[in-house]
Length: 444
Image 1 (cartoon, rainbow, N blue to C red):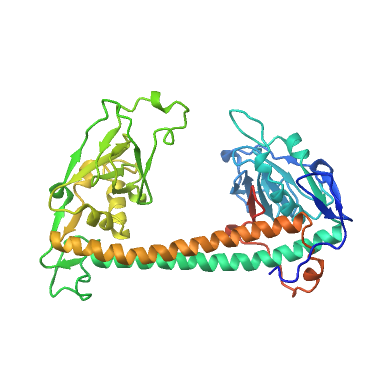
Image 2: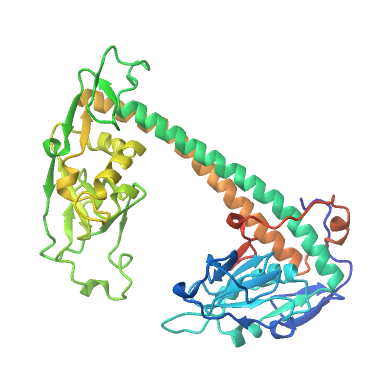
């Protein structure tokens, strides 16, 4: 997409070390000479009226209202919270008081070009040290950049929008591939742990029986289907001696271990009282009572401590922990955990120990469990590698886009001729889920 692009034929020294050489006909200006950033207005949740006008906060769209305080198109810049994050809208919006906004009342520049420009400026790096970091307008105004003539701004927008659309299509295709790979992994795991196939032969088992559980369906006739109370024992060993162990956390089924300092927002983690934390051993199941149904459940690989929000269950001798790991990776198990987590005794999400004990699990022989583990370790490793490769490709697309925008906006590449030769395309406003944004980088 950059084939044929060349540097500008005539350049000059910008006088700014980090900018270096810039096109001879471009101007070096501070942001305050390019645009004004207006403050958004207060709009509490209970003050919003039914309407179709998007409401924008620092992190993007947060709802709707019946009136706007910007014109179209416009740029919304995070002032507090996700400060420096840059959002673009083809339509008028209501920018709330945690943001700044820019439209054609506050800049004579091409607003779309200005969006790319602000993303390149890295406004997320402009903040004063304080308890609540934020973007100070006067600090932002001191940022330096280079400004091309209006006609050239339009050419830059035409070229970058054209390339961006193609990069986004590629990324969406890769994201769909990742979703398909994850579905394939789920299907493979479910087939194995529910006995749909005998992993040793690759064929179904000879006979099946009803499990009595909707989420399990039929299981091999010789498998046991037991309530968790028969195969787990709850463990509630507290960290009374304040052992300085690794903290174990579980997110989306992924077990992680962190140092105590990493596990704390305070600088002196050694002084925190962790006597109420629970000890967990390798092979123990730990799950967050409030988020188990979201995947905050898994088999620990580490000796460490978990927060009081976790329940620790220790499998009895008839279970291989790695088999349990796969059993709990199935969407069917997550659905069952969700069912037990809500509406049993309260209106709050919570998978209590007594409810966990009432969930049924299928228990093949130890030999079959070992065979299932070997099969799934091998099969899911290949799928996981494919997912990792695809994610890396997405990262490379994003890195390429960031680098290209930086080179074009800073005048390192001349896109005038390339933009003039592009085919005509209808630039329809982006749908809500595709709102253009940039956070500390020119990502659109």
